[in-house]
Image 1 (cartoon, helix red, strand yellow):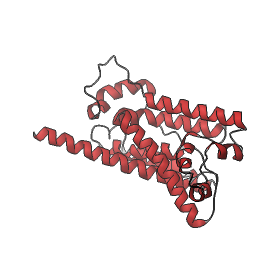
Image 2 (cartoon, rainbow, N blue to C red):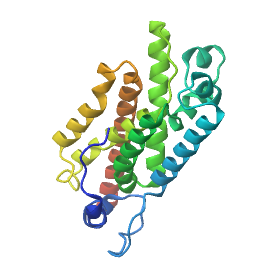
Image 3 (cartoon, rainbow, N blue to C red):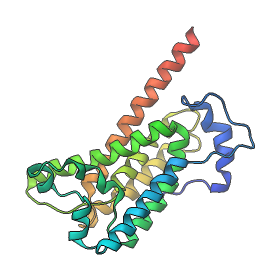
Image 4 (tube, rainbow, N blue to C red):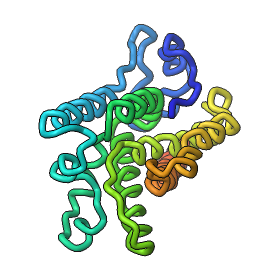
Length: 233
């Protein structure tokens, strides 16, 4: 799931010279010697790892009974038992070592840029609502098809970050670094496995991308409107 982003060694320069100019949540651009730390991205990764080890301790990350007990998404339980927490907890759970490794790499690759651009509060809003949206869409689709599957993973939330990165291709300050063809290529790489691998929840991915893009677009438009209003006055 990891798109081809600029080398991490160039990250501080990118933040200093281009992205920070657009941060509505920050009072001033940091000094060149200040290195931005995507704290929330790191925290989410740590939480995911803690959940993963808990799964292993309680019976195994690939054990259906274990992940169900821990709060995996399962449409009958959500709709019939009203266990709404199953729309949230699966965002921090994973099914097997390969699953968590791939998602961790993708989260780090995308999270650092989205968190830097939008700020911590907006970042966590995008991340969580995208993950929830992916699970909600899964419940809706499964309730219509009658085909149910146990679902866990941060993929929907991570896809939301990728959807939010479409804004980078719209913003004149970042579009050179993140051109639209590059973002589209990343979207194809992320979404394609969902249509070729039955074990991948394509619905959650699509829901995450759609939610992430929509939320990020609204945030961007609001910030732009606010900025232009301040300029006029």
